[in-house]
Image 1 (cartoon, rainbow, N blue to C red):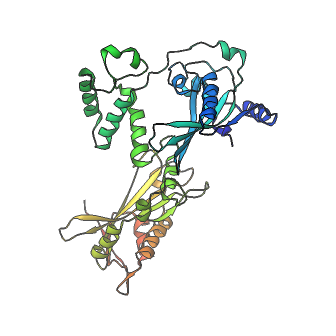
Image 2 (cartoon, one colour):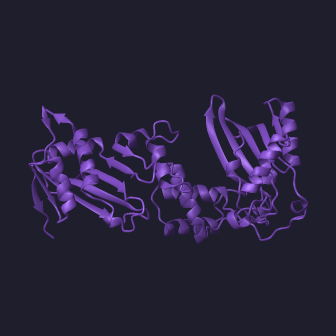
Image 3 (cartoon, rainbow, N blue to C red):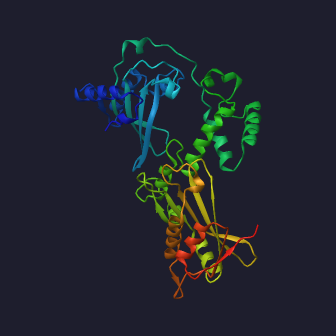
Length: 383
């Protein structure tokens, strides 16, 4: 099914596309891996400038608006949705948008060696309006970083390097012509790439790093990333992270909160070792990120007198709440602490029970502790 919702167009244009599809105006071709079929696929792509060589040109009028891929027995299947130079005000395209509805959904089959790919399907509307055919460059297109520059920078980010170190390495390699394909005699072959990392390039590098290293897609809402990691049905499910989250509740409607309670197996053992029949320390904070989130941390004190985190409770402020620090009450804290107590269960026939808890003067926090452990001795922290 064509992913029309990912195209940058108005509702009126979406209606037009639906009508064109119903009228059979869409171009649909399915290709096999055979030589003859792939020759036909190549001819179609070259005719409409969808071949790899045309797409790599900076002046290409095709832009990728959506893509996905999945593993198969013979390699990887990749599906890409191209749109014919969509609104430059939204996507910074090099051409002024003329209302052209042309787009192409192309499916590729990539071999196990990742070197060969074949086109298996093209679903597209390939007719252009008159303004579109005569359109000229509205502004100079951005010149992308060379793939080797990106590889080196991502490797450095993965090793914990900062911006200054990455820039220093880039200047050094640039000076010594150390990047792949970089040569004064080969200037024309690299004219479509840039080797010098500019400050404006780091936002894209960090996005690629987060996506590659942590499966964080910053183009979608943070809560969707969290759900992708903790939902067993998601392709981005992370079993190790799921094992460390004993309570998770997504915010599915306006009146609900996002709630995540975290405790690794080591933290669980520490809770029993240093908090059961001993002292528990609890405190919360706000403003830990740009979203309206609050976090409470439960600590135990080990044999050396050092604080040791045994549980973390992360939750969102209620909808419409203007001040994050006021986005909690006794009920939400008691709910989270009660869930932690139930999750800890029993050991040697005993329920998890701290004898004392130290907090600040927050009455909501202290009330929640007493609601969960009624015989708890409450102490005040000393600054």
